[in-house]
Length: 463
Ligand SMILES: *Cc1c(COP(=O)(O)O)cnc(C)c1O
Image 1 (cartoon, rainbow, N blue to C red):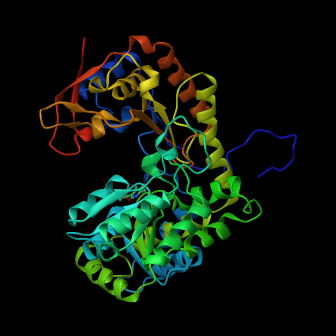
Image 2 (image 1 turned 120 degrees about the vertical axis):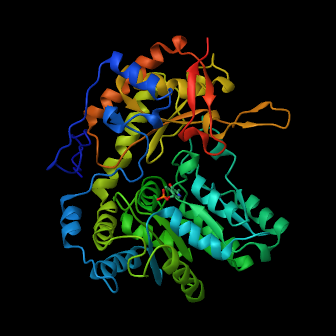
């Protein structure tokens, strides 16, 4: 990074070797496409999207070295060289003894919770990501979130809104009985809570409670590098440490981790499970063999393992992290300057529009956030995702509508994919929608599936 004080512009720390055209559409075309998709942007073909901010998962641009690794990957069934390279890299960062590759993060969760979960068991976490919660619950266990009160308030600006409420954690352990808690999890950064980081001090406090009750601590490590960089920027005593040193310290307090390589390993597919307990690792590997594959490839090709190894090295590069966090913050700050309400402060991987303040005239059961998602597509071909009443709204016993606490529109930023001019374009489109916010209409659901309805629901405008 350029350290000269007269330079203010943060530039992309890479140049572009290979480009992929994006398709421009007219507003008439987009109106037709959106209508055909039942006003659900999940149902729009990706080719009809100009800027795709649906997710940061598996959407990273790989580097030329990662692509070189794809060609160089060793496809041996057993004992692949690429596995050993990946294993060595993960051991260097995380320090765990046993590394088990899986095809993505949820496969690691499925294996872990099939073994440690089950009826009567309880898993505490700062906030379970939806696949984590689903895998815990599918095993018969209960998933409990212990986020601090500050972390639940979208308007408070604080450094570490992903922190675990440690008093609540201890209460959960005592209420449910230590014998029913197989492990404690901490998600870094806290994806479902707005990509907010967890402090080193908080990880240490959680470790102390785990020590007191002799419980293992696992990190849901999907965005460990972004979390490490936030610690460097915001926590006393870390400014002069490298992201690698900070990550190493974070993992030194844990006994294991689950990881989706589709996030901070900068690849399009992959994940792994890592731990120190050899009995547990043996059980996990046995399950891996019948579900994913042989322990030196899991659910992946040798080339994928190679790309993960390289990606893990690149993600801890300080120039990359500086650009990554600053570019997300740039989007958040520009929107804030325009008076557009967002969840504060900007997180690591996404900016969340606060639909309740953006379009207060639309009641939760008319899906304000989904209406904004539609407008972003109509006005500028941008694809965002609703995180509100469509995704989490429920019906009570008497059929009454129960809204979740927040109505959000997530603008997730794929890693290394878009340049600053793409983001400036996004800012312009969001502002355009904001200026015409009074014209936004509520929606009615005309079709929904019994589970995870947001993927396939169809809508109509309410009048
Ligand atoms: C994405 C994600 C997962 C699940 O990983 P997949 O690779 O999508 O299966 C788990 N936890 C967190 C925090 C995530 O962001």
